[in-house]
Length: 252
Image (cartoon, rainbow, N blue to C red; front, side):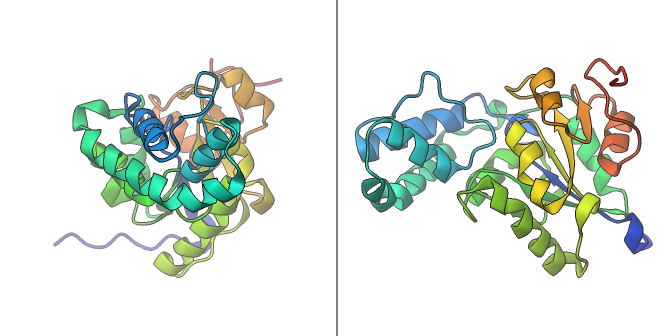
């Protein structure tokens, strides 16, 4: 039996929270088609999809915004929200195949390297409902590295989720993570912004729909083009090194 890893000093410990879509993986548009068809079934319309940006939003928020855009009133949206999300999850489970899920460059190696570090506690921070999140992550073999998370099923407002994750980390580890010892890794401006009220460390990765230039304007603590350089990813996540452009050059 392997010896347990020594517990890291409290000052060195980090809670690292990963977004899913655009950060850990892409799922070939299966979730977007599932939510479209759920909306069509429950409301008779999918709303203004042509120019809709899903990035960084919770599943309930997506339903609400699209249906408001289609002219549905809030009372009707609220009344049909639960059944719409339940149908969406059923369609996602029926349609998502392992071959649809593709890891973003280098991210599996980065997650595994972080999981092997005794200083690091890993979790998910995502707008996905928890069952949908687990369905997407499972083909990558990473669910075991994320024993807890904060999800769109916890709150519709993405900005409320970091506090949920911190409380779950406390329950899981017995340790309260605060300030820059909490790290959010994500591909959207909402990932950078959502932890600002807690003063967390934000690591932006330009592997989703948002360009590195747009992410840089949000002022993340670190910015990566992707995670192919695992050593650079570890430095970014653990707070070592300066914020750099996606081309590796130091920012002025």
